[in-house]
Amino acid sequence: MAIAQDAYDRLRSVTESANARLIAVSKTKPIADIMALYEQGHRDFGENRVTELVDKYEALPKDINWHFIGHLQRNKVKYIAPFVHLIHAVDSLRLLREINKQAANNERSIPVLLQLHIAEEESKYGLTNAGANDLLTAMRSDPLPSVSIRGVMGMATYTDDEEQVRGEFRRLRTIFDQLKTQSFNDQPEFREISMGMSGDYPIALDEGSTMIRVGSMLFGER
Ligand SMILES: *Cc1c(COP(=O)(O)O)cnc(C)c1O
Image (cartoon, rainbow, N blue to C red; front, side, top):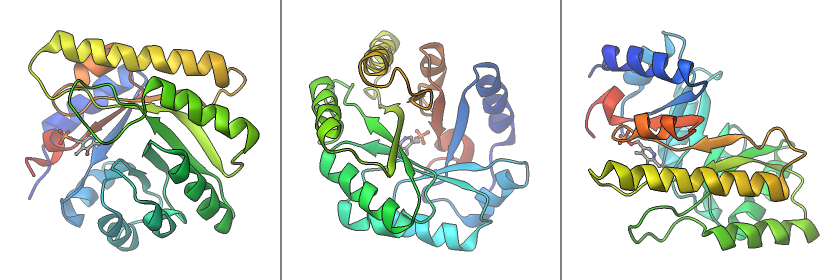
């Protein structure tokens, strides 16, 4: 097991020059791989399974910023609520309400992103543009004081067609801009666009990503 040092160095430099953050997606990878980056000062790691995240949280230094990037079931929010740094993939009001409840139980506020469905592929996950607007409208009459919506997240279609990927990222950026104007104009913390993975992060950065989530390029194939 080893990390790809040259890839890490390159990713650090491209994210720095784009003013973006690199989330090292460590799902399925061992503690030793995470420590190899931690020792170089890296603190942002992404996981997509609750039990794996909790195990790693318990085993690793407490100043790691843990990003939950996968689909989150409501009944599992309570396990990560005490420590999670950012939940990337909120796609329903019911999930957001549960996060709010568990955040309050832990006397904290939990930062989240709204996941938008931007790919051509069929997927069960992600809000439509209208769905995001409905959610925000519902929150006006039923505020959720213990969640902090920081921006949006999306995944492009898995394809070699760069123009398609670029178009999808551009759409996410447009949705972000609309939501910002309509609902978050007075909230500077609404500023994140989480998009870009190993296969498409250069395009994502080009289109305004503020967080790329990269796994296999750093840690090898899963
Ligand atoms: C696994 C995963 C990634 C990282 O994918 P790579 O292709 O390995 O870089 C990014 N985002 C999400 C939501 C993931 O599940």
